[in-house]
Image (cartoon, rainbow, N blue to C red; front, side):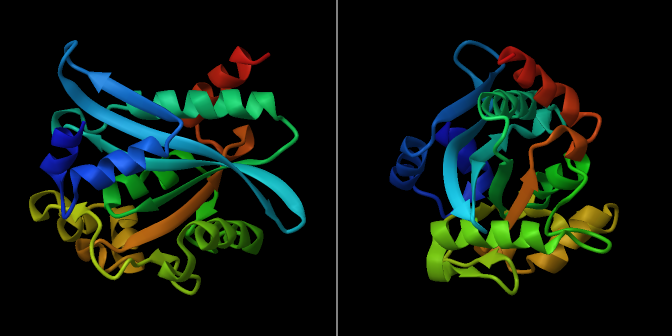
Length: 221
């Protein structure tokens, strides 16, 4: 897993990778053979009291896939299905997806799979979503999180895309969402990350995401 991670990210360490991995509840692996890992994603599950209510959220950690498999939704399918299971266990509590992004490809999961998210496009998201995003980010990152920008800045890079894979300027010419990411996180190349939030809820999921989530809900029926 770390060998794949290090192929795409620099300023990373094996010890920190293991520490982050130890804090996760699930790991999703994509394999080409029994021994060759071509992608993985990690996640942990949390409770938070905010605005006088208790919510649940999925925190997505390190995620990477071999470039030959970019665009393959296998990792997302597993995460969305598990989110559906979690929602099915606690149907009365709102469930959110929270992550911090240092690359435009992972950021584009939001507009591709969710209807409303933070940071939003057009008229932007509701202030209620912004408050929830900010509450989670403050709890996790403290003074490293800037509510005004939505950015998490550790002062030095704890991991950033290698230059040959970043390509945000080139992608911004083709994709308005890559352009949006560049405008929201202009210092991603030095490891600054953008805090993002979306709600796992069928009415908020687009047509590719809803079936995956619904499968998890049915598992708990």
